[in-house]
Length: 221
Ligand code: DX5
Ligand code: ZN
Image (cartoon, rainbow, N blue to C red; front, side):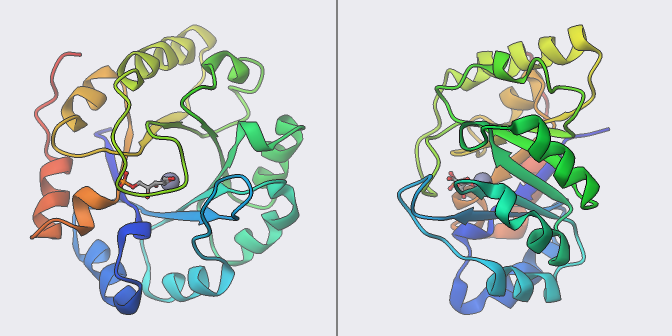
């Protein structure tokens, strides 16, 4: 399987949300990445259920929902009802991560776990067979348009090694500051899904920006 591209709608023009969702639909992108922020787990508040419902009305491609919220268990059934395909929670926000992942699966979604830049990958050792996706944050979550943290390259390699040694088969997703300058190296290091906000929506030609990210010449990392 080649790598997947998930444009982050956080960087869309919310005044023209349907148009921007349709751009992603028309592009070579694979998923819609949807960032939910509660002003507690992260300093920023993004959007919630009514906006995701509106996105869903225009989206046929899967919705990859990234929850940057405290106690996400409260809302699992809501996101299932909205049609989320992947539901990703932060390890740092879940006291009972194993229980949360199983609740997501039982609600009919694919469970993901996101790790902040400071969180070591070993927190996943005991749950790596219970999840379908690991999202490595390559910025501190809360805002689009931040600078990529270079230590992520090595973290991707170590996560890919952990996956092999455990015989697990989750996807590795990278989120934050991803663009032409690092995409090929990330895929070379083992990334399966690239989230891209600013580098797609702020590009002069977003369709072309997605096409470039999708058709990388993979470099050896
Ligand atoms: C950051 C979000 C990201 C963000 C990425 O907290 O999780 O998905 O939208 O935006 P860029 O690609 O602009 O860093
Ligand atoms: Zn995100």
